[in-house]
Length: 96
Image (tube, rainbow, N blue to C red; front, side):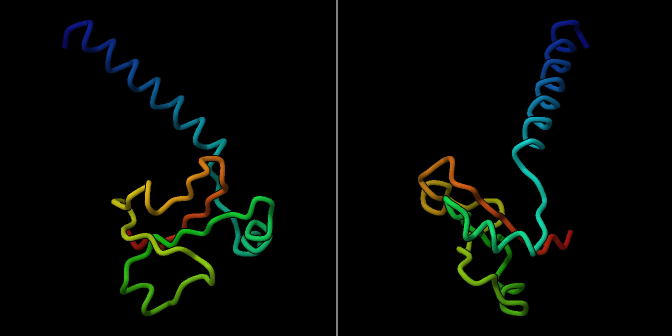
């Protein structure tokens, strides 16, 4: 591997770690007990269900949750709030 390619790879990795560190500051796991207060907050959190139809059929959905069309291929413009600062809560069964 030449030096330029290696340097590019290192910069990508460093940039990826910086993005991951920033994401950890913005994203966090919450407990179900915290969800209600987030939904009642100002502004209220939008709850987004990323489960598939089979899981939803067996387990139901959180009341008031918006159902995403897909866990990874949803249309951001149509399915997420227009306010980019709005708090969001995503949930899925994570059966992987």
